[in-house]
Length: 474
Image 1 (cartoon, helix red, strand yellow):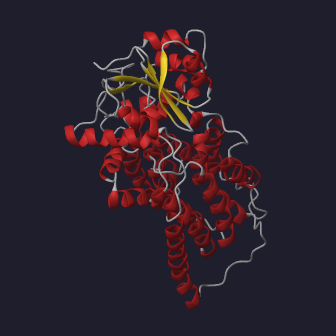
Image 2: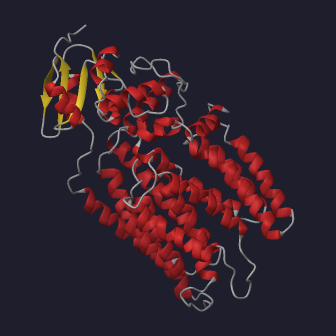
Image 3: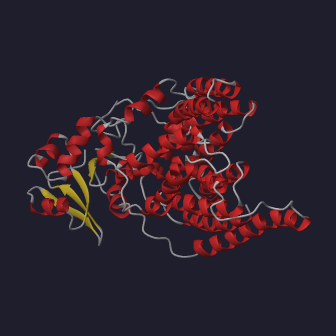
């Protein structure tokens, strides 16, 4: 781990500064805070959209991030924000550290671990933020570590799955991964031995564990429904992974190629040792990473220990067996992480003092709208922007960052307006939209400039706010 600590320190500095100092670049955090406030106030998790979503009031909703939402609400400002956002950075670091320890446990050398943790860190980087997905990264890393333990401790994976299911619907992966590892174990042993039976029990327990949340069976049913949900085509994170994604090209793809080259081959001393458990596990994550860009990060976490141990088995760097640790080695084992993270905190403090970048959210026009008289039914050209209006008096939105619960017809109308199909004016009129927020000089902005019955109510260098000329306060 001694070299890996240096790599982790570099990512620690950037994760901490990104989380604490930089404002969120999407609208999720705003609706998640409102969700947390609702849970604390009503002592219940909402199961449907309210009137704040005028295009789909009463639509069924599975707010999978309810626990994260409570934390987001409690840590919305001041020291609370520093603690909450810092915890997200620590979650990313914890995931990488657990995966590193997993690799060491499997026999990877310090060089192998350092190289793979650098690639995994790059795979995490573009997805990192103060987000619910980040909170479950260490749970995934711990879950995979527990599955790899040949003993009763593997049963603890079910408890991890239960916690996971209260933070994010990706907990649906838990029984699938456990089942794959059980099947791979049977292939490795060429029989159904004690290890395989134990893992099969873990898979069954995980299937029960992911229902241990306020939604019960609705959570895995919701997660399964996402695979064929047509709204994914409108959400950037669900796009098919391609070479334009730096985290994929610089992190996940090298790990994937190394896994393909080394992961299923035996060593010269044990040519038949193919590690079917690893092969099937990587097969699941390989399918996920190639199907959607949002899965690049979890592939990096899963692949790190597998690829690092494969490099060690093949003696890829020609390293000889390590000598027994000396007193100096034991001191260094403590000094490396302590020193590295002290430097990381110092670097993060320096980065935090710099000017934060733009959020990518239409804060200014929406803030101006909230001060204007009248009730407004708002259409945002980027639906995530409208999350900033949730809970604001006199404002309701067509579509916002909660995304999943909105019916298909709402998404289809949203797409028709954004694409300026012939019916776009009729859709806005039929839906009762009287306010539109768009980027300046975008096609929608220019179309509204030419359309009759609309007037600009706010303009800056990036955005324009349009109101129907006939809109009045009710």
